[in-house]
Amino acid sequence: DSIVYGIDINSKLIEVANTSFSCKNINFNVDDINTFTKEQIQQYDIIFIYRIYIDDIEERQFEINLLKNMKKGSYLYSYDSVLNKLPKNCDFVYDDIILKNNK
Image (cartoon, rainbow, N blue to C red):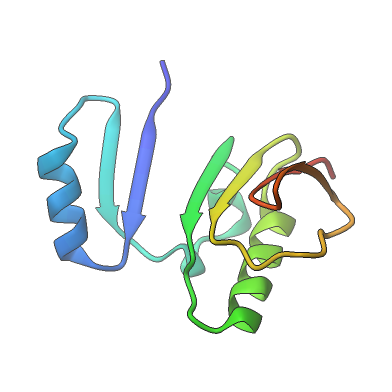
């Protein structure tokens, strides 16, 4: 069985998610992915993000750092990604949105 974890720094959004998507395999918690260690990030096979930063430079750096810390074979799905030049350790999969870490 797969388990889905959802995080956000906004407790109100987490409250809405927990109310809207009540299921035993789905967990929503208040957290900040920027504080995750490499070991925490490597627990996940697929990471979905929706633009964390307004600034393109900050968003690009965030996405690159996240990819560098993900385990080999994992995927990053970034809605509204700013990556237009992929890091060397990734394969292009679909429209600069889904990236696979092959390093």
